Length: 185
Image 1 (cartoon, rainbow, N blue to C red):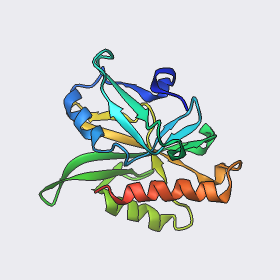
Image 2 (image 1 turned 120 degrees about the vertical axis):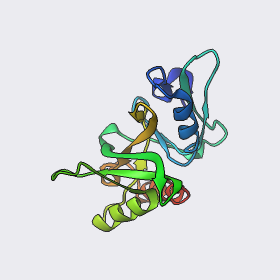
Image 3 (image 1 turned 180 degrees about the horizontal axis):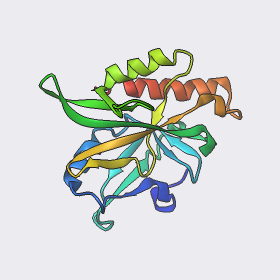
Image 4 (image 1 turned 180 degrees about the vertical axis):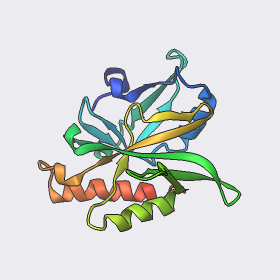
């Protein structure tokens, strides 16, 4: 298993953030709740910790749990991972601070629809009942929506593109991502 020191996909730069503390607090809420993908080693990490090493100023480091190698899926080609255009953002809904999902529209005047995260996930599921939505994070997905709002851009794994993986392995990936999504609100 690769460590963060030799896998640059697991070291995220926070230099350009205007509200670095907000971004850090936001992303920490997703630790072990969204899986992290590294294209350079073709691995999907489901069990990891997020660190901010003092010697790596303004860097976020994803450290896979070395005692749980079974929580890492190997041989995930980058061709199976696609950007979704969707983003998770913090925001107010009905007077409460919640996680919201920004869903892009391809046509019309409205460019995005922003809904509570779980509601948005249900909308996507209804629109594509035979195609599971399996969002993950990659380096570069932690962004600023504007100068004061952090957001997480989502990528997704397309199971049909994992031809070298057994049905059991694909089912395991789908199960762990679905379980993690269910606890986000």
